[in-house]
Image 1: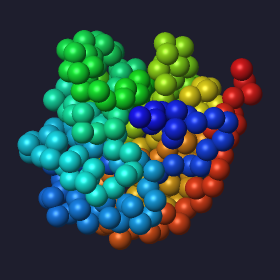
Image 2: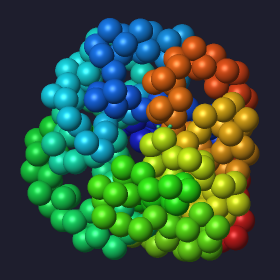
Image 3: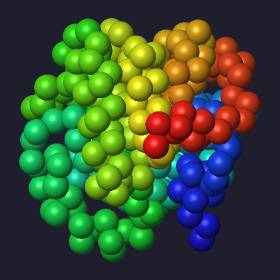
Image 4: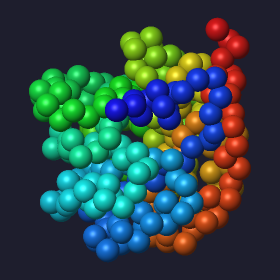
Length: 256
Ligand code: 1GP
């Protein structure tokens, strides 16, 4: 099995700007998932993320099965808890919440999940997960019991990301939280992207094609959109029209 990380996430010097769509099984019915995934295929979305902060429904694994039965697009778990592990997916973002100081989300949950993760056969993508203040409390910041990084302090975000990279993490995910009032500001994305040599993912509160373009222009390799597409799948055509041509993912690394 080719590695998702080596094949798609970090295949070399240059790669196209990528789009990931987040599906929260709590928010969609099976028929909505089927219709949505067909649309995602049509617009060549790069990754489908599955996960949620609460997971009130018991449709986590069934949702992944449904998606996998329709598409060859890589399905990556974006786990909100240690219950969200299933070998039916292709990979999992193993999130270490490096923006916070909650030891459970830095290492504790990982210890609890290690055996299950190994047995699942999932490809593990070690990810430095950084919550950034999106203008109002989000489920992610509340549930994680951590303070998000201030959105107007890019230097704190950059040094946090650098420390994550030095610890061996393979991606950085900057998240304003699902449904965030404000998406992550460009200066913060820029400073993080120019400070690390690993792919930067950005999500939370991206609602318009213009915002998506700014996220890429600031240096994100992968933009993650959830709510906007879940609520209105027809907006996908507009997001897909945003330029996703090839970039050097290490374009900003001349500080090293
Ligand atoms: C949340 O980054 C994702 O963790 C997506 O956020 O639902 O606001 O697009 P939205």
